[in-house]
Length: 358
Ligand code: KG4
Ligand code: ZN
Image (spheres, rainbow, N blue to C red):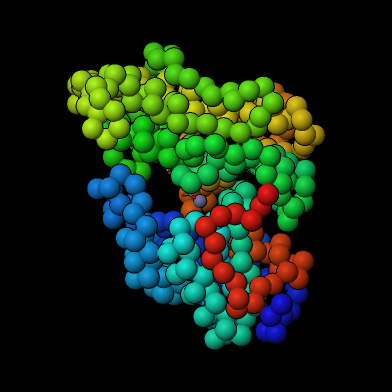
């Protein structure tokens, strides 16, 4: 516990900081829901040529951007530091060098401005993003985080009580979208490109595998789907490992063929989620299905999971498009629950690569 000045009030104004991967973000949120400002500096341009996030480049870029991004969030909210009730930071899970930048900035601000500090789990924050500028989630709920680094299913008993009930055993779904886009020559990040292209394609042109992983499990797997797409586009490889060569590549495909691949891939990827969520509903009595993470921006996913919730007579909560991908409003919003419960951290708060939610 910190010895800093702590006033537990119902509608705290919190500055949130997020730097877990390749987005440098800061936001001010009042009462866990009212977004006063949300600033996101994306690094997509820096990582594009590598078709994925390079950790060293990401942490250096965070270092350059964190102070201007925080200043801009405070300016846009038209507040002074004295108007804040706490500083919150996404301190896990993520890339360690990236997390250290946000965590250090948050600790410095909390110490120098004599404000309470709240460490927030990035996955819990994704699941609270649907409450921004909206109503609280009706609980209990099933919560699904679908992002570039995670595909995890949670039972949500209360806002501060999450239990992990399923997770990917290999690639995250967003990673599979990004790799699929690379295979099809669509650039990085691939999720939005696949989403756009799939709308014009025939989703039954190819029958890609949907991993079931046995009848009991709520876990996910996306590496088989990615490999199936790779072989369908480029042919069966000659040789093994890094030395393998393929008979063709995406350059041989017409725009229609690419769209058919994108649509068929997306159908299988979303189906893999639907199957497990159905199974989760059979096992857990819940009111609501909550979705969060970058892939929750996907058009097909939003449609199919909304239809699933409707079939089951449940409410679905999806974040507004700007709060699907990494942002700091979800960090500040999520921290309000901890603030109201009087749960604060001290300056020993550490960045960590894994989530603490089990
Ligand atoms: O939540 P996020 O910003 O970062 C992590 O916490 O990982 O998610 C980024 C991921 C990327 O893999 C990106 O391709 C994917 O979200 N994504 C999408 C869409 N928009 C972003 N995937 C599918 N369809 C989209 N519209
Ligand atoms: Zn994320």
